[in-house]
Length: 339
Length: 265
Image (spheres, rainbow over the protein chains, first blue to last red):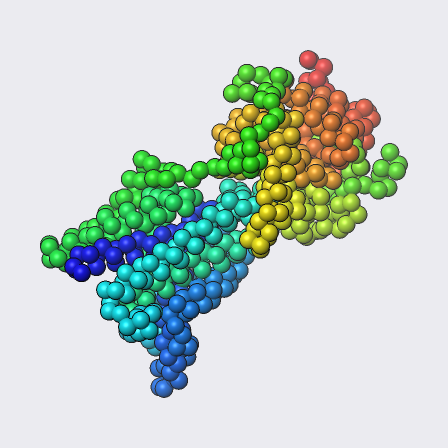
C-alpha cells in the first residue's frame, strides 16, 4: 500500500474521531449552553486513562510507576476510560455549575484546563510529566498479528462503528424530551427552572455525556499515536473543536461531521502532509493552523448557522402525522398580531 | 370570602428583600384566595415584581415565609416551587427563542417520562406515545390562544403580543394550581388586552387561582375579584377594588393620580 493511501486512511480516522469529539461539545455547548472551554481536558483525561488502563501495572518506585495499569485490551480500556471521564466531568460540573454562570463559568473552565495541563507537565507519578505515556499498545494488533498499515485500516473501521453508534445515541438524546430540556436551559435557564426543570441536574448530566464523548475521542487519539503527553493536548486545542462545531452547524449532529472533515482535511492533516512531503516548511503548517481562527471568524460573520443548520422538529414529527385541527386564525387579533 | 381566606392557595408572611442596601420588599404579607383572580397593584417601585420573584423562587428572600396550598416552600429552589403547582410569566416575555412554539409548550408539561434518559432508551415506545398525546394537548392550547398557525415557528420570531400569549399558554399546559402573571397586558394592543382578559377569566372559571400584577385599574376592576395593594414593599390593603377606592391610605399612595386620570377618559 502506498504511503499516500495510509495518509488518507489516517486522515479519515482523525475525521471520525473528531466527529465524535464535536458531537460531545455540541451537546454541552450548543444544546445545553454551557461554555465548556475545558472540553479538551476531558479529551485528555480520556486519552490518559485509556493509555493507563491498557498498560501493565507498575508499582511506584521513586515516585514513578503506573498505578492505574490494568493491562486491559485496548478495546475495553477505551469505554472504561470514557465512563470514568464522564464521572469526572460530572464532578467538575457539580463543583463549578453550582454557582457560576455565563462569562464567569467560561473563564473558570479555561482556568481549570490550564491548571490541570500544568499539573500534567509536572507530575511524574500519575502521568509521567512531559514524557507522558508511551508504548500504548495498538488494540488487536498483537492478537491478529497485523502490521501498522493493516491496523490503521482495521481501527478506522472500529472508530467508524463507535462513531455511528454514538451518533445514533446523540440523535436519540437530542430528539428526546430530555434533549428538549437541555435546549430550554440553553435558551433561558431561568425559564427552565420556572417550568419545573432541575437545571443543575440536567447540566451535570450533559457534562457527563459530553465527557464520555470527549474521552472516546481522546482514547482513540492516544491509541493511534501509541502515546499521550502534555504536548498532545494544549488546552487551546479546544478552539479547533469549537470551530468544527461552529463551521459545521451549531446543534447539528451531521454538521459536526462536516466541520470535523473540513478542518481535518483542509486545515490540520492535509497541510501537515503537504508540509512534510512537498513544501518541507513548518511555517506552512503553522499558517494553516492559524487560518482556523480566520475560518471561525468568517463562518460566524457570513454563515452563523453553519454548513448544516440545526433543524427544528415540526409538529408532524411529534404527532407522527399531519395535525388535524383546521388552521384557525384567532379572529380577534389585529392584522399586526397575526403577522 | 371567609372560606376562601381561611384556606388560601398562596400566602406570604413578612417577606423581606434588600438589594445592596435598597429595600425592595419590606414585610409583604398577604393571602391569595382560591379560584379567584387577585390583582397585585401598587406604584412603580412598590416591589410587585420582586414579590412575584420571591414567591416563585427566582430570588431568595432575606426572611419571611411563602406557602403554596398549605405547603411551606420558603427557601425552595425555583424548580421545586414550580413542581409544587406554581407557574409564572414575566413582565418582559421570556420565550425559549431557539425552540418552536409547539416545543415551548411541550417542554413545560409536567411529569414527562422522557425527561429521564433511562426511559428514552429503555421504554422508547411509551415515551413516543406520551409525546404524541402531549403534542395533541399542546396544539389544543395553541388553538385556544390563537397561536396554532405559529406552531412550527421559532419562538424568537413572534411579535410582542404573541409572546405574551405564548407565555400564558406555556404556563397553562402545566395546569398550575396558582398562576402568577406579571403584567400580562403590558405593551399589548387594546383588542388583545380584551382577549387576554377573557382568557384569564376562563382560566379562573376552570378552577385556577391567579395572581396578576396590573397597572390598568380599569382592567383590574373589570376582571379581578380581589386586590392587594403594595406600597414601599409592604402590604397596604386588600379587598375589592370598589372598597379600596374608599380607602384613604390607598388613594394617597397610589390611586389618587390614577383616579383623576381615569375620570379624564
